[in-house]
Length: 314
Image (cartoon, rainbow, N blue to C red; front, side):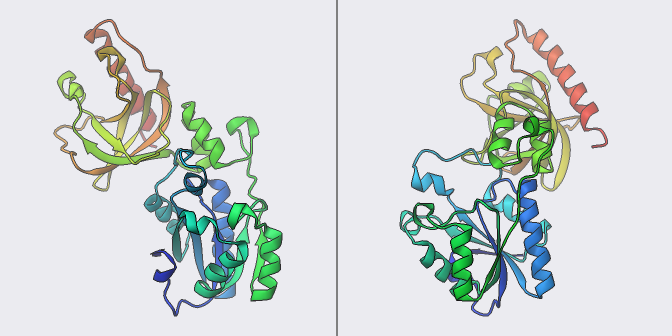
């Protein structure tokens, strides 16, 4: 799959495309519907698929300081889109100047001149252009003049998560903030993942016999509620069952909120400086302050036992 940042990187001989546009944060099951339909129609028409997305998140430019917690960084989103069969991802830098472009200018520059769209597939609530003035109705009208069609796909998948609320990135963020990793996984179609570089921490885990990878997460990452979780730590292409702690280590009067993952039954791992991924499978318990190190060790041993059982065979 090709990845382009900015219109200038789109090859001049790319040919016609089936295109979908959006933030697609998390590439959840609703997003998978629209991207899957885009791939399907492109294959029917004998052309290639392009997903257009933005960096940073538009809200950070339009309303500075309002950046939502991110469900997946751009490289991870691209990986997930590639798995769905997408041919290319175009990341448009979302600048103050870009945010002021009219819907008509956006269509001409992106869909017509750069991508030569033959078909554009969107959800019913898609908005684009300055102050979100563009709608799918306007997009269809502009398409008739520019020789591309517009197809609208209903993204409202529902399940048990959120008491039957339609699947959305907003719902996933809420479930994650509540520590409901089962619900989040239902909407995402996979466990929620947090990524980052392993850095040196207080090294208390090593002293206690449970050495953890202290993950400095990607900025704006959607971090689960404080507590202990079962999941996996992936480093160097290896996926290892893990017990994961999120919080400030209250037993030691900590103040810095961290994500730490203990790779179960692994000895001598040296992960410092590596980019790793932490996948959250299930919430085990809330963060607690223990009266003694012995009580903490007993609970940690129980956490590891439960995490091992939950990840076994998963």
